[in-house]
Length: 475
Image (tube, rainbow, N blue to C red; front, side, top):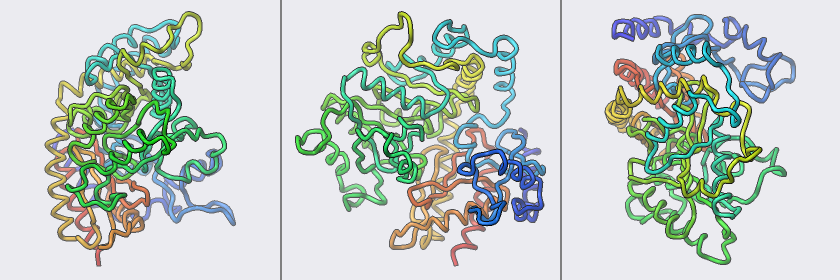
């Protein structure tokens, strides 16, 4: 998208501010669509205004998206938005990237569906080869799935198969998915688990993550010597800690839904060394952070760490449902060969359309040096956001991030989380034509993970809008 068109769309966002403010209140096309959604979708999914007496809901309907191009999305009323979240960090290459569209449509015309683990397709073989070549270290054997949660569950199976152990250690505020297996290692919200507790495996010990702003051990940044890892090591070594028989530690190199929490330098390397020292596998969930998001191809490369298993998804294809768990040959050597029936598979395993678009996405990632672009633009954006933090220190407790994975933590001077304020900022930014999302345990973090191809002018416009919103709410 050229600069002239970007400027025109940003000007349109500014000119249609009243339309944004009134969208979702029952008079627009989005609400007409949501009327139908209320009749056809489980009420526990999309938050919307109540339709019937006594029905719970929120004050405003969501917008209904109709199309996308580059860093922009349009709703059914034709209102453009700057997508500052890349639709959950998926659209790293921008929406409707012409090469990705051509890849998936060309494969669909040639072979839309394969035969999973029975007869592989040529596209699947080519994609796996490219993925192994890009992956860190000797991570070379993949088990493909459709969603991130499935990749997590495949990784858990790999670890149990390799170690013949059953327990896992995961981190507080972690997010690894909401299917039963993935829920067993997700620490983000108790509400996710409570209704299903009797069916969720309880063989997981949760430990504090390296969140220096909210250190669970009351330490000050730079002086703790990784107290959280010393605690983890004590659990692994103490016979009375109840954390024996551990197959693996599972971690996000940077927590995503937990609030864009970036651990201090050296922490991930120390975690790797701890796991190696105690004969415990390390699973890294790079579903959010992978493929350039943090300024390097994979976030673990920031500290030259190679896990035993890595979980990938989201930006791996830029939009087609495809995920992967990649393991080292040592881990996979314990997985039994398929002589009649695979012990873990699915109908759509290695779908040729997903593999074709993924193959092209990997090519674009490297060819256009998107990690480098994320690193450069992210460094500028974070510096500018820290300028705003100084101006609004009474409500912005922290600005943190890596590459184009950035969070603003909203809290009062005593660090009491302000989820209400983060949500207000997200809503007001939407009223200005920018889509952001809240994250964190209390919803107190304003998260931004735009497409890696986002024009610099869009980042400048977002910064200007955000400054105006902070001026409004910090009174």
